[in-house]
Each structure stands twice: as C-alpha cells, then as structure tokens.
Image (cartoon, rainbow, N blue to C red; front, side, top):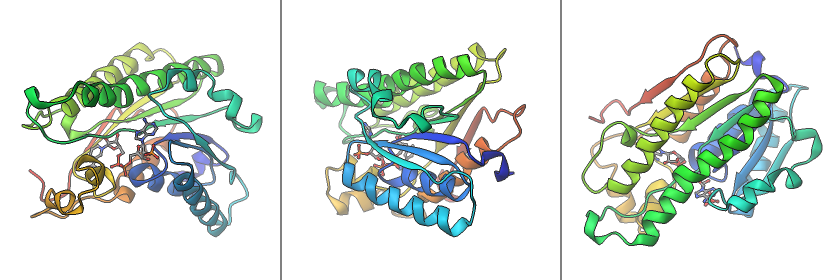
Length: 256
Ligand code: NDP
C-alpha cells in the first residue's frame, strides 16, 4: 500500500540514470521527498524535474521536495560531510536506496588494471558500506528506517569475464545479509534487490560508450527496464512495518 510512503524522505544514490532515476520518479509519484545523489549534476537536475512533474501529476499534497546533491560515493570525505549539503527539512531520511554501481570491461583476471579493480570496489562496496554506516546511525537513533541495497544476480552466480564485478556484488550480498541479522532486534529493515539484465546506461559504461558492444549483451532476450526494478524497490519499501523483504531476485523472462 503506497499510502505508507506519504511524506517519507528517501535518499537514492546513483539517481542520475537507469534504475536510480526510475526509482526516484516512482517514489515521487507516491508522495515522498527525495535526496537525489550522483556525480553528474546536470543529469540529476533532469531527474529532479521529472520528479516534480510526477509528483504534480499524482495530485498528492505530501512530499514533493526533491534535492539534487552532487556526491561521489567513493569519496569518503564527501560522505562524511554529506549533511552539510542537505536542506535541514530533508535530514531525517526514512529510506536509503544504495544503488550507485558499475562494471568496466569483461577482461580475464590477469588483464584487469589495478585502477579498475580499486574503482569498482570503492563505489560498489566501500561507498555502499559508508553510506549505510552514515544512515544506520540515524536510523538507530530514530528507531526506524529501511536500507535497500541493489545487488545483482552477479552476487549470487559468478560468470566468466565478471570476476571483479561479481566479487563486488557478492560482497554486497554478504554485507546486506549480515546487516539484516545484526538489526533483527530493531525496527530497521534491510532489503537486497538482485536484478538480472536491465537496459540502462550500465552496459554503455561497461563498454566505455561503445553502443554496439553495449547492445550486444541484450541479443536474444528482452531486458528488464529501470521501471521494472523501481517497482520492486517501491513495493518492498511500502510493505507494512513488520514485513521485511529480505531478498528479491528478478530476471527477464528469457534470461537463464
Ligand atoms: P546506470 O549506469 O544507468 O546507473 C548507475 C548510476 O550510478 C548512475 O546514476 C551513476 O551516476 C551512479 N554512479 C556510478 N558511480 C558512482 C559514484 N562513484 N558515486 C555516485 N554515483 C555513482 O546503471 P543501472 O541503473 O543499471 O545500475 C544501477 C545499479 O544496478 C548498479 O549498482 C548496478 O550494479 C545494478 N545492476 C544493474 C544491472 C543491469 O543489468 N543494468 C543488473 C544488476 C544490477 P553518475 O555517473 O552521475 O555518478
């Protein structure tokens, strides 16, 4: 029941495109306020405008405040000073969506640059952990909150050419499972959403802007859309307070 989301404040990392942008727009329609975080300011402003339009269309009075905040989740100092960039009316976050993440290439282990390995771990794992630490501190103090981490099927099944990305998403899976158990005696909920193939900017980033290579990964199947995953995230967030959706694995119908 989406009415449970009315007036809540959501923080989404990686809100400038793909799953994060679609999730922001769907939360906006449900009457929430949103902190939109990512590195690209222009793209965040476009998503902010889409949120304003979606909220207006909903006709809801609650929510409707959307703040784009430039933040690189791999920058620990930037995370530590995040609250100084957040308008005071939006500092009580109810739902954290840790969505920022990426993969580069599909090289064999011996050919992967150290900087590529460090970059993926810094964003997909260490950034997610740092954001969680920051927010869980608040959630504990206010005795409520929901952490929603975006894992992947790559965090459950390793594949050739995905060694580092799979390792980061296995780490997300382990961290999220452990956190859920650690917080089991509190009202704080912890969810992991594990998408299969979703057509977003993800594949373009993976192949450094080569659109033919990016499209080649979807041959023979109809990929999911960012909206498909956004619906799962918003659904998990809108369950009654005593219900915790621990994990959700979502595939395109024709992905093995
Ligand atoms: P997109 O490339 O469209 O979106 C990724 C988002 O992450 C962008 O908003 C990007 O914004 C942001 N981001 C990347 N690095 C950083 C950083 N260091 N700091 C802050 N933001 C960052 O891809 P998706 O929407 O598909 O990906 C979202 C999540 O879903 C990722 O965690 C991905 O691993 C996961 N996923 C995706 C699948 C797919 O097939 N697409 C499958 C399974 C999981 P900006 O560049 O502006 O910083």
